[in-house]
Length: 251
Image 1 (cartoon, rainbow, N blue to C red):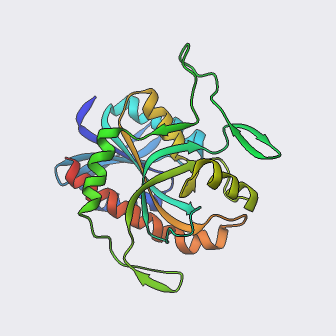
Image 2 (cartoon, rainbow, N blue to C red):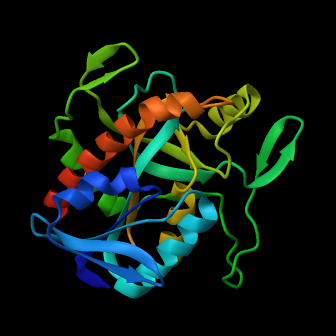
Image 3 (tube, one colour):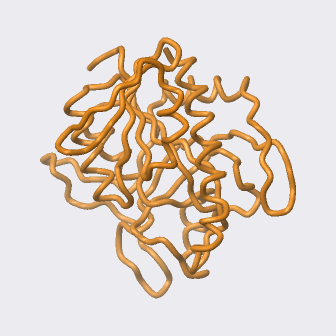
């Protein structure tokens, strides 16, 4: 494991664009035809790439990059829909824990979450994954002294917050009201997206410290397309700005 490398991943180009732009001594390369950038933020040597959308893409790319670079830590950054309406667009959640919200049995009363047979003998795969304790502690300490840039969204301007919370993942873009209610009541998550838990699962399996950092975008809903287009990049920038700030201090 390289103490000098932090791997930063996001699902789509605009989630990592500010981080790439901030890299000093930046150069571009490819791994298995996947583009990535290497450079420095402060004293931190950083490798930055996108995973693509969805849990399979995220798990595949994460595994490749962890195996190749053996980083000291991984930060996953980007936007996520707001399950908790008290979270505002641009508020950043540092994931204490991530969940697969589609792991188990989908019954009339909603999901029954359960472990499944995993690849390691005698070790079932869970549907939830805790962030690395020490890395989470450091990132939250950094957040306590961080002042986000002002956001204008949904008809008002304000200073977003950075706070710990729960994030869940699944391979669906829109959600019914019943599904949203089920996640809230059973998992207690603030945000929902499509990659974080898969990345966390790979990191946990390969013993790489990780934290998922997500900016809240649109409210979770059945058809989020237009709201996501309006708010997703605002959320992604806030997550990226905080990720960059954290990188400068983690080194």
